[in-house]
Image 1 (cartoon, rainbow, N blue to C red):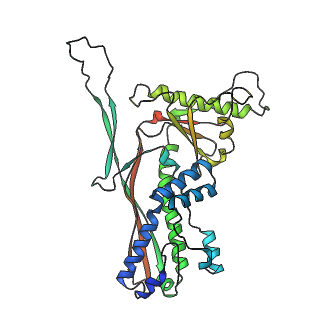
Image 2 (image 1 turned 135 degrees about the vertical axis):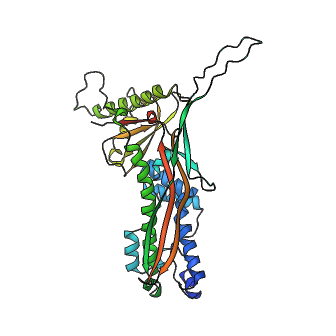
Image 3 (image 1 turned 30 degrees about the horizontal axis):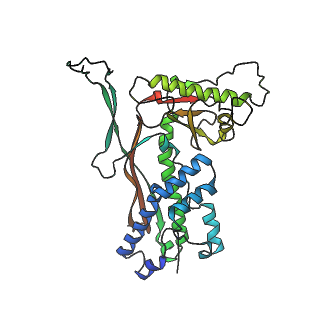
Length: 356
């Protein structure tokens, strides 16, 4: 029996006559598509979010295991040592970078016939007035515009020599599929991080100075400047959005998308307290949650974001593989396609913060 992490029993493919049998091809293609869709399921998404928040792979794996409720996975004893070395190099990643999803309002168009969505920029001039008894309420006309965001298709292909199937080198096939899935989800994440990183310099915030005569050699000098910067960024967003109908309040939740290079720095700032005693209040004036990523080009800046609202992303089709056999190259071809799109409809929801 040849067990795998994608095909639970390659022996079933063999008993069907091998990959040349169309039914066996369909079985392999179905298993690949199931494998490619796993990261979009609740257990995997929970694991990804746990990793984005903590950076701890062990916590992410434990979250996944709990979510799967002890679903069986192949054990290391199923593979020879030489194969294990390859799987260790390109292992099955359980904690995809989905931190960007925390910033975007996610729109599900999978079961629709739409290949675009609209972000409305509506200004109503609405306000509530006292209406004397017997008189009519004053009506305000809605005005504004809408931006249509189209969804694009993205693809990449895999080519397996038919000899891999004939020689029963299933580990190599699965190893390629694992790396392929990782690259596909990485590409989608990178597209959305690029949108955030590409905001105009208009929304840049310098590293804020601190009050008082605290020398830059003081151990609290950097975290004090950082927390003042974070507080100022939240305040800027609230002020800019207060008349745009987004229901923002001082208690609104903000997220920080930050490069992992700041993972030891930002928690220190957010943990600063007013006075050095146990019940002292935090210097963080707003409700802020940090998510870390490897995908920002600039590793010294971070982004304070009011999530959702007009920061939107839509998916029409998750990563799906289509397969065929190329007789000229003796290669089984699998091409994966994704269909999605995103946009930032209101830049005032984001502030780029400096750390120096």
